[in-house]
Length: 228
Image (cartoon, rainbow, N blue to C red):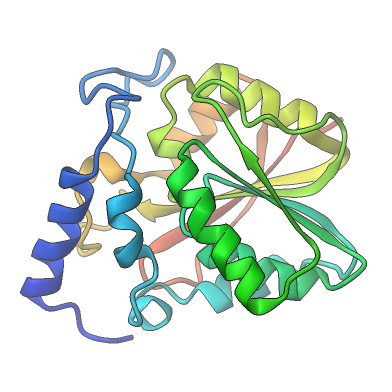
């Protein structure tokens, strides 16, 4: 893993703080756990999402490999941001599969659209979501992935219930979140989550943790199912 310099840490924190939106007030709290809901990263933070060091620092290719996604799968990248994961998921599901990338911000969707067109991807669909709704069709997805997104949801319980409706009966919801349990992870605490928080919050809405995959330098991969 590449070293994390103080200068990059300062940039990271500044990018998050400077691009926070009013979608979720800094002091709003989750109704179950009491966790402070984080502000949302705006389009101005896209450069950090696409930074060249991301593979060395977060190992996204390892995260995708750990999910064992079958070719032909239908996957939603919810809160897709600049589309960093979207284009990689597109390659994994292949021409028989589909990736639906959602984001609240039209500017982020514009960035994804440009990547999709530049790379000639034909299996990606873009959807503009809402703070309380990912705007996904019911019973459609084998996998829904949220990379450093869940902790920013302004209406987490309403949103999670709609994610549940969008999954197939045997589908998986995967949260990739910076580890709150590890003080060495160079991210502000409000942008981290613990496994116990995920268990408590999503358990209240019918999800159970199927497994936790801890193969990444900074993040948990938390796989959840509904038990339907």
